[in-house]
Image (cartoon, rainbow, N blue to C red; front, side):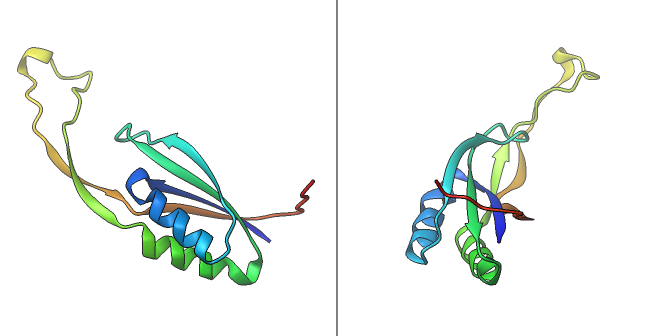
Length: 109
């Protein structure tokens, strides 16, 4: 058995949840916040039998797409505020960050 942690952008959360449910994957959703953009995201915790890990990863891959987003960087400590003019930059966000870990034992009470 494996435990999958999938951190996805909020925009992909409902689509992924529906797709996992459709293929009979149970998941727990946690509202989380990313550190880089300080934007909301969702962390899915999914318990999966070893032979279904690739199926779950395919569903995550198919439903969580990367996209471009404009952001304005904050001033760093080495820059004086009166000379700092923040220009928006385009960054890639979205997709999914996925961790797959072995499960030593599983109990459902």
